[in-house]
Image (tube, rainbow, N blue to C red; front, side, top):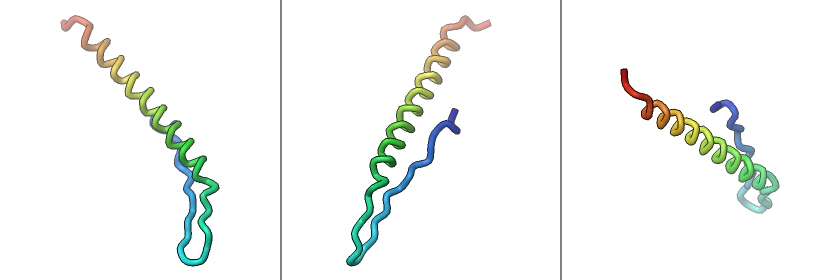
Length: 59
């Protein structure tokens, strides 16, 4: 499932007299939010599996 996490796209900024280009920043935040949501889903699935394993009687 970890391979479902997308790489972030970066915004570029330069110093000096150049202007900064933050046009990709929204995409970066959207990607970060999607990744965090996916990680939360994975952690929930792991916790549910752990709880099920703990609830089964030991033999």
